[in-house]
Image 1 (tube, rainbow, N blue to C red):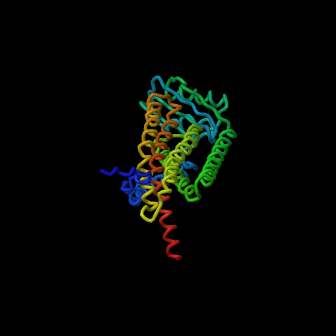
Image 2: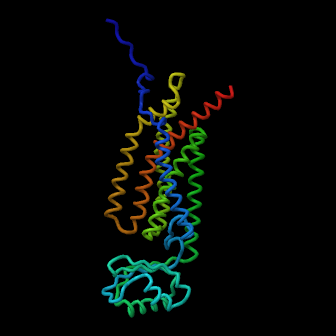
Length: 323
């Protein structure tokens, strides 16, 4: 019997991989719905708060005090606190943020930076109107430091995106860089949209840890995208008349999706534990990271890679029509 010839490396590639690029309308619909909802929430947040999300004390400056009332005979509401307390100490405090947490007991008061005298007046009026209380925390940020933190964070975000685009454009091609940045914008928009919704309906305020989480999400997402792009580039050596670039992308995704899923899953488990069992100060960071990594894993496979396939198809069609 004649021996079978050994398979060459190209025959080991499964060119009947699932048609992922061909299902681009499905991925575009999912992403489109999420992006549209996120943009609507961001625009509404801009009109209501002057920012894409409700900014916390870290960015705006001022004083934030958390109270726990021992027993309140009067109804503890935002309107009552404004009318009976804030309105009596000056007009500049009338627009202060007042949030009742739960059980007619917990109160969060955020105002412009308070002097010691005004702080004592607020405490005295609260005690007269709503009974005795314990002060859980007092945080004060200067009105000049807060906006400076915001501007520095936005600059860092812009520099990060430019740096990522430059690196991918140099390491791969410009079309790879464009698709990678498209995926990053996709991820950040969804994270901002979710926290804009939480700010509108739940009054959630973001702090500097949220900005840190967004920057970390950018790094994680582009790392995942580079893994996919690198596999696509390795498989382009099999490009021929019988094997289109779309087939190569499909097989490349098929080769790396399990690795990406396992990497993301282990990180998500850690962040989930941090969100559930961690302190209040880490919840925003863990929540933003959780959502960002979830969307980043999705965008690396079904946004960046699929967009690259469609982009290449259009470029090939343009070249063929010119000829």
